[in-house]
Amino acid sequence: MDEINYITRAQQYVALSNTHDLDATMALFDINAVYHSAYVGKMVGKGAISRMMSDYFKLIPNVHWATSNYRLIQPNTVCFNFEMTGTNTKTGESVSRSDLEEIEFNEEGQICRLTVGSNLISSS
Image (tube, rainbow, N blue to C red; front, side):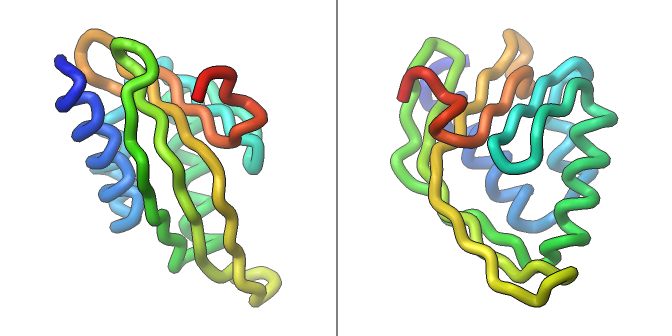
């Protein structure tokens, strides 16, 4: 895949996440993917990532990510800025955060590593 396709693939991931279509979102992940977030912790494997996302969509059912500044930082890695908004169903409080996200793709174009949080991302 070339630069445009990796960026397009990252944008596809965000678009699917915003629809909360878990099956379609998870189809983008490699079975051994690693998801590391400064906010929800580290998950290893597609099953663990899927469970975390399912729980997150239940906790914040109106969660939405607005994104900008997609850029290729390695031949197969895209970084972008995001603002996440929603309402926590347990507390009733509005949630809003802005940060960085980094997605690394394997040779098949699947997500093999996803990192959320500028404190976890070394090259931005």
